[in-house]
Length: 368
Image (tube, rainbow, N blue to C red; front, side):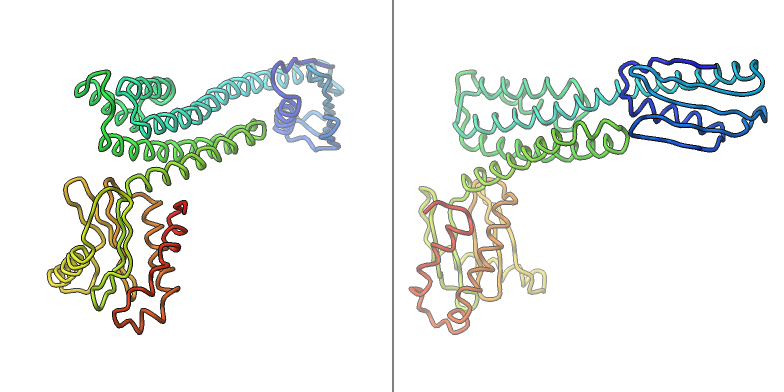
């Protein structure tokens, strides 16, 4: 007896594997199987009836063709009908899974699209555009995310920003610099959260669906684009809030190097004295020689990195990010490596550190 089953939109490979799984569930011995030609031959006694049978399988797109041989024609017909029913049920379940996999792919694709939209909104902020343009951009991002991720934490944050703009500003107002900096920081954080989400969804998709191979390259490109956007946005944001840097000799308190990157004018001696006093105060309060790493004054953040010989301080008009934190750490490390001998024997000659501006530009990615 023979039976022909249409496997429809399912791939030939998957239909073949589904059929093999159902045949092998009968506890038959595998006589031959060819995955390239999609054919197989099984023989043995059926565990339910004890009857000796032979089952052959081959594929003739879009059909599964099964043939069963046995001494008892009635039992052969019944077994073939039973096997056919199991295969059809498995094919239907697989098709439903494929439809679900399409939903997952759409969700992942939506994250990639929203990443680009968030990047565009970031660029709009950097240009100090009108509030109505930024609000429209945020609303589009909210609506796109809401389709697939209605309970996402990022959505709640985006909605708060939309309400803030609608309640505090006229449509034709341009975003002020402090608000722009705050929103730029949030946009970066939102992309980071979406990146974690998409990495998780891709991992689940890979473990659950056979279609992963078809989407792997697309997913890889999408992830790379997110990382590329984040890297660039972190740098743009970091350098936009960096106002001032100063390097102070730990023992003497003298300023070895300073650079102003905004219109703010500061007295380096006052700054170095202030930092030294703060460090002494922190040590006195904690009774430990643990350096103070950060301070906040009005809209400014002061970040401090302490090395063996120096303290480097940066003044920011926004929250510090990974780019600046890593840059400050690397700057202190490289400064001490480059000038180690001079720092050990330092007696007040600060002119020997003039070329530190090259190190500063290189470390923080500033164009000379």
